[in-house]
Length: 261
Image (cartoon, rainbow, N blue to C red; front, side, top):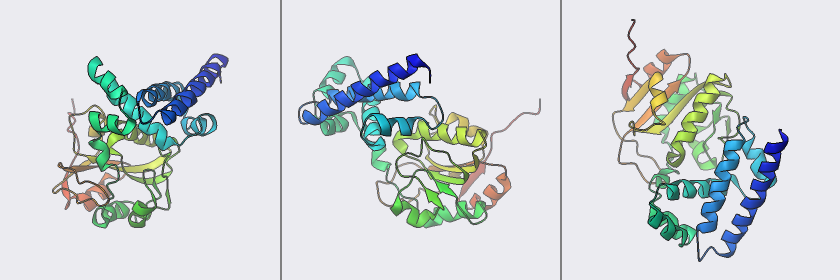
């Protein structure tokens, strides 16, 4: 690693740990330290653009979980979108109150587990086996039955084989980008993503290059709030016919029209 970058990362780790400890000490008074820790974590993650480097660096240098880091970063991102006055008011609240104030609507669906009737078409598309679910836990995998699954660090580990991911709505942009990277790099043989039906978003735009199934009905997820909109399965793989066969009864399967000229 370049000396300048290494020195910068050491400084960032020191500052992140300081803000984390200050936040814990003053958590009933102010979210300001959690917000600043999130801003610093975003800088560190952007600096660590090497594949798979973020998770190990976080574990070795800051002393708290990736889940805590994600909460801090999400808080920082949301606060950055507020007006200066609202930003200051959020910083003066506790972390819990700040998250309530600026809204965690999308995160209310982060534990939306996929029902078996929607997992089985994925399994059949893959010939009977889902090799990896990188966005999961033990409860979810009781239904998905992937050979392997990741709980907290799916964005920072490789995705081998045939992959299924019912992504975190609050981090949709990161999960879609990760899926594209893993598939295009040849690490994943194929990826089927289950994403919310919010199509007018920047993170969704790259998925128009792949076969998509727009579900005929809303999926009745379990374990969390049910979204008010439909859902979309996106297929990144070399056998779109298999995807079509299994999903055509569940929704409208389509691909982007491409002119021959």
